[in-house]
Length: 215
Ligand code: ADP
Ligand code: MG
Image (tube, rainbow, N blue to C red; front, side, top):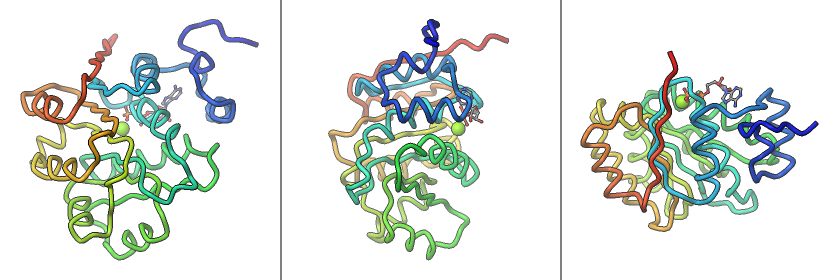
């Protein structure tokens, strides 16, 4: 039963275990942002993508990010920065679903408004992917509980909202702790000057993606 439509997940270069997982999640076809972003991100490119809420951004960055994680490696390998605690939790839940084919892969949420102790404890137990809000992430990095010096994938999710909330300095500071050879995936609904600045300063030949909304 080969699906001949180009937007079917089976056309991506993914392991069978992930294709089976996506199938179990009921994901057969890519959303428009996934269709544009996945081949490029899986190919290692940096992306600057315009996409709205509900467009399926998490799988667009999550599938390529999870693909690169080595569970045997104890280091944090992927970092997703989100504007709010609620969005961090949603992204982490979706990443855990997408990671069900990778046994023992740990996704940890580090967001403000929650006590810090349990977050420090989960980091000590090992985290392959960290999802969190800018203030708390910066705090935990500076207190040396979080080491992001070996990440391979950095995601800025809803980047325009983070800037609107006044997190520019935290974002810039956090990115300063990541290695230069990372892949950087930036998602934003709008492109004000500050987003262009972040992209120019921190991305390498990013591929630009825009998805039309058909309403
Ligand atoms: P965004 O971050 O862009 O708001 P999400 O990544 O949270 O969107 O995805 C929105 C919803 O769509 C989630 O419930 C997710 O499980 C679902 N979803 C994402 N991609 C697909 C797909 N290819 N097929 C079916 N459902 C999907
Ligand atoms: Mg989202």
